[in-house]
View (cartoon, rainbow, N blue to C red):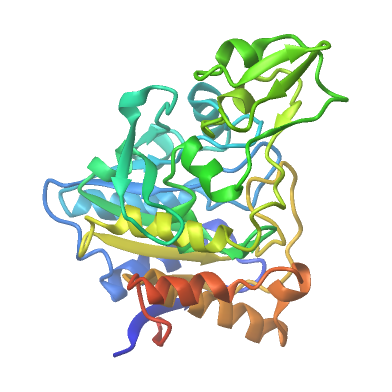
Length: 357
């Protein structure tokens, strides 16, 4: 049986107020928030955007969503997790400050903004899934403990997964930093010697003493490294990072297994919104204003993450008259994540597209 995906069209150049009205109509006519129960706590999984980026879902749209959740007698929390790469979203304090600069404040959106500090052990949780690559997923506890999740994604391209939508926002986005590293690479972080000053901050921070200073440079013992990524966060010179291209053949599978961990105890308690607006080549993690690569499509809604991503993928490529994501990232096949997600029972590749006028 096909899953239902609702779409309201948005054209290039439509202003924020007009799109907000359309979003409200989509939520009302699709009734896709009916899974939210009175008195429940709802984590609205967001991406607040990297500094210099404007592709993220706008706070004005988030306010519409949070108001609808409040109208159902539930409490919304706009939430994201800290990043693996170095930047203003690496730690919770800077991440929250940047979110506020981008307009994500309690007054603006009508909900509390949450970025759990995953350097505190109590804010992470191990979830056993025993899948092909991931046996134990390392998640931000906030998304496990919440009563329900509304996954709100900006649909766009991605250097490692071809494209990023609902499934990526869930699988990668709800992982603690150690979980992100587990997905991104099969190797420990590397030291870029031209940037390393041998300051010793990483050595002091490493919880398993896998880092030493030799000849005034940091050296990581891969056999001892547990992939917590603390060294990446504390390095003041961005001299430690993940070799992002490694693990490229399996990152989508790992990401989907992580998505299954997030959804494990959320049956009937999760919904998805994809904003296929200002579709860009790369993720909103890119610290610059990436130009659009496809016409605006609109906003999609579903309770099936596979169907909503497949519909978004199809609509963008139809509008471009070619597979734009394969053209932009020729070494990636974004459909791999969709097929594996269906294989794991996360959703359905077959969908019925219902247009809301």
